[in-house]
Structure formats: structure tokens, C-alpha cells
Image (tube, rainbow, N blue to C red; front, side, top):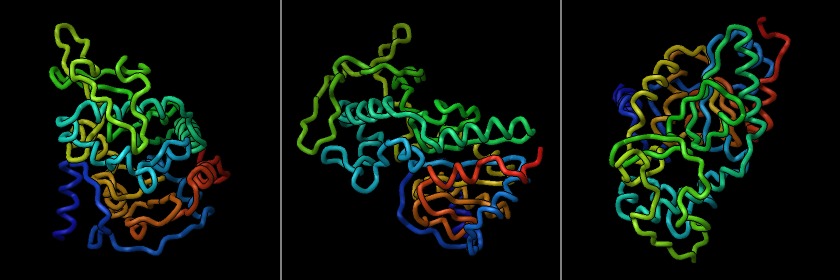
Length: 306
């Protein structure tokens, strides 16, 4: 019970953190998962409210680096060490270079087969009086570009900024986001920092503010947006089917969303290139690139209720 309460507290507080620890305990009994697609289609056809949790593996299908393994470093720093409020406070120029690199990279990417399959599924099921919500850890906005309408961005968006002074949030798709960052952000290990003066970094354009802007993303060690987290909690408690797609299940609190749903006895299907620390809690596991397995799983099936 202690483990269960601690994990639920992590979700409730919404503190973003990364862990490679494999959670064991009474959150949900371990199950022997199935990879029977026909059986999954039958379950899918009867579901009325489907929650789909997506992670970096979905973005990877569009060519966006996952910042794990060979891509975990930018220059000589670990990516997750740059994505902290402390790093931004110490060296906003370096952190803005890092995020400028990420912004420019995703601006040149297109939605993958996964993004398109999810958007098509949502539109098709809406006509049947059924609903699909995407709860994503991705910050690249590719779900929206693909046409998905009901998307909860739990970690924020690269295409938004937030003012450190007045708190104003705005969509910002400028390229570059400010002139001094043009052609900056190269990730090579020997590239020197640009050391851009703070007053030349992106600034707020709200009247008489001119405060320093930061990416409107959830840094490690920060809490999730309470409004988004409230919506996520509602989806976790009401869905009757969950898909966990392309996520390593090591970044909290999102790593607990699937197991929380499974603890209610709701079927959860995982789509990943390998098993994860949470695979044992899920009814289904479909191994392989989600760009191959997910479109097959979501394709219109004769057993669908019309």
C-alpha cells in the first residue's frame, strides 16, 4: 500500500522526474500480456472512451531524436541536465541554444504514420459516438499537425513561450525565434557556446514588459500544469481502454498513467520496440516499430460498432 500511495502522490503532485527504477508492488497485479491482434480488435470495437498515451517513440517515427541513448547528449551535456530550471537560471543562453536546435529540428519534420493513424481514428470514432483523447509527453505538436483535436500536452510545447516576468504564454513559430540565435545550437561536442547576452535572447512583446522568455515546456523538477493534470486525471478515471504508445515509461508522472488505468481492471495495450518497466501490468503488448503496429491496430475493423 505504501508503494501505491507514493506513486499516486507523484501523479497528484505532477512533479516531472526521470527514473530507470522498475516499479514493483501492489499498484496492479502483474499480468501475462497477449499480442493477439484479433483479440485486441474485439476489445477495441467495444470501447467507448479511449485514452492514448504517447511518448518519444512516436516522434521518432517522424525522425525526431528521442534524446536517449546515442542522442542523449547535446554538445557535452546530457539533455535532461539542460532541461531544468536551474540550468536556465545559470545559463539561459546555453539552454535557449539547446531548445532553438530542437525547435528548428521539429519544424522540418512531418507527422508520421502513427500521428496520421491516431488522427484518422479519432475522426472515425467520433462519427460513431465514441471518443479518443491523446495524452502526450511529446512537445513537438506533430499530433495537432496530423489533425488530432483532443490532445493534452502534459509536458508543454516547443512552439510556445512563457514570460518569466508577466507569465504570458503565446504560440511562437518564428524561425529563428530571435536574430542572435540564427544558425546557433549545433549539437557537436566541440561547438563553443554562443554566450548570447540575456537582453538579446527572446523577450516578451506584451506591452511594457520585455521580460525574458523561456520555452513553455515542463522542465525536469517542475510540476505539470495543474489544469492539464486535472484533465488527465479525469481521463485516467473514465476511459474504458488505454493504449500506451512509444514511451519508455521512465519519466514520471506520465509513467504511472497506464498502470493507474490498469489497476481499475481496464484493458491497456502497449506498443513499443521493446518491453518497458511497466509492460508487466498491461493486458496487451505489441512489439515492433509503432509506425507498423499501431496503424494495424487502429485500422477500421469489421467488428466495430456503428
